[in-house]
Amino acid sequence: MSRRADSDETRATARPGREDGDRPDPPDQPGRGGRPDRDDRDDRGRTADADARPDQPGADAAAEPVRTEEAHITAARTGRALTTSALHAAATGADTFPAVLREALGRRGLSLERVSERLKARGITISQATLSSWQRGRSQPERARSLRAVDVLEEILDLPAGTLRSLLGPRRPRGRTTPPGAEGAALQILGEDSVVEKALGARFRHFNQETSSLMVHDIVRIGESGTMSGFSTTNVLRAGRAGADRALFVLSFDDEAAEPVDIRVTCGRLAEATYLKGLKSLVLEIHFGRKLAKLDTTVVSYAVEVSPSLTPATHYERWSRTNLHEYLQQVYFHPGALPVDCHRYVREKVGAPPRAQRRIPLGAAHDVHVLTSRCKPGVHGVAWEYGP
Image 1 (cartoon, one colour):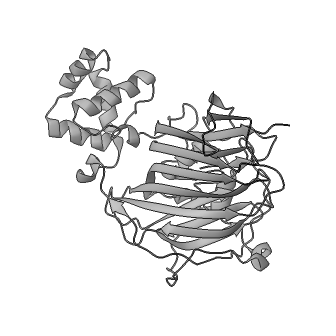
Image 2 (cartoon, rainbow, N blue to C red):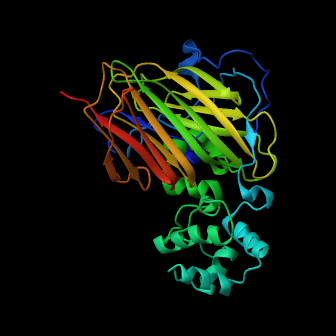
Image 3 (tube, rainbow, N blue to C red):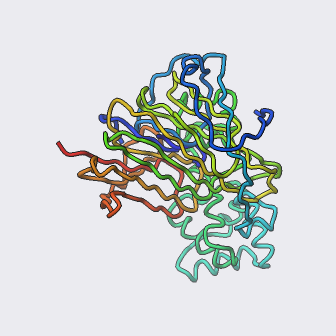
């Protein structure tokens, strides 16, 4: 599955041969999550949301035209969302890199000249003019030296590690401009006319603008036939503005036979689950249970069981449009379907060639995992191969 866009999040499991709104709240229903009505599946509409999806790396599935009618599966486990204020920035009222940098400079009483001198003493040369551009939002750190300066700035300004880094968006395009905000960041990773954009329709423009992911933990389970039997995700989200109370997620599948058969939300409340058969995508809308204050955090957890696909899964990806503090991906294999080789990889954007490939060992529990700290925007995946 390909992971959400925003997560911020996205993931994808692929077949062999591929490379790497507001709605009224439904009545609370106790017990397990939603189970799609299989008799109505062919009549479901084709609008979805993005953040996680099981697509094949680097290839967009051909999509049928989106129908106007939608089918909503509204069933959820109701419970209180877990919330906490874990970042220093939560006390400042600032949620952008320039604003947090300005506030921290003012709080420490340091001039740009003094900061430049302290950076130089650490072996990093950053001019006062550059620092001024950063705090005014006219430019952002992107080169390796600049990003190293950001890490040292956090120490100089007594900020928790990652506070400034986590607020940096994707590299700014050098050519044509892209739309600002969530839509522009997603387009840089997904490209134009993506499955996620088709699934979300008009909602794509404002896709999860009120929240961003801080930490994501994906668990993928591969069954005896080598196909994905299910996955679960825990996502720590931060509110970028006061009043955020929900998030959207899009999960895409490569194989038409691989469809969601059961959805459980264990943290948060499922308000919408729409499977778009033509796009092979599942859209989830999960409510937090309360309106968040600016920079408050909440935890969303959900699990999806999947019907067997026609071909074995060979990889799983997540795409993210923002920096993640931490991303943990685990893949568990059935003892009867163990791979002979596994490796991790990164893509700059969907469809780009994989880079930073590295083999990862199979653990005693027949699992592999990848833990990435300060996870940059892009596509992050694990791929595996089976023996003859």
